[in-house]
Amino acid sequence: MKHFNRVCDLICSGILGLCSLLVVIMLCCSALQVFSRYVMGSSFTWTEETARYCFIWLDLLGASVLVYRGGHAVVDLFSSKLRDLTKKVYQTVVYVSVFYVGVIFARYGLALSARTFGQTSPSLKLSMGVVYGVIPLCGVLVCIFIINRVINVWLAQEPKEEVKNQ
Image (cartoon, rainbow, N blue to C red; front, side, top):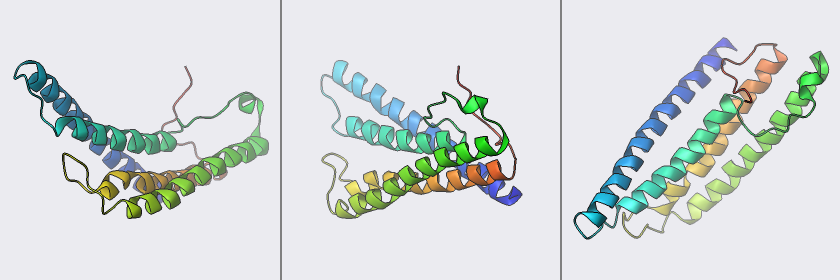
């Protein structure tokens, strides 16, 4: 289990590094777009599209990191009052629900990506299958991270980082 936690930590670190790069690219493209529009009087055609696709990837990859860190959406009305086995069962039910969403993302995202692989984006001439490829990737990552969380719940190991409600 220790090795699986370490692998998930490494995957999460890699995703965070990629997300940082995507934020930098997105901000540079947006700044270049504003500069070219207002200073040069004509905007580049590719900057808006690049920023949009970076945002899509950033959003979905960030969602998988949130799942790993326990920041996914949960209605927490009574779980704090639960103890021991009941709490473990409740957490597992929540995690299975999130896992199911990950499976839907993986299955239908893969179908969408495969269907749109022949289409290209207007400015970048990038395959739309690559753009939509983040959907099944996010689904697979969510499933891996949920498996990790369920194992940690039942082995009574606390996850490294838990996002706390403010």
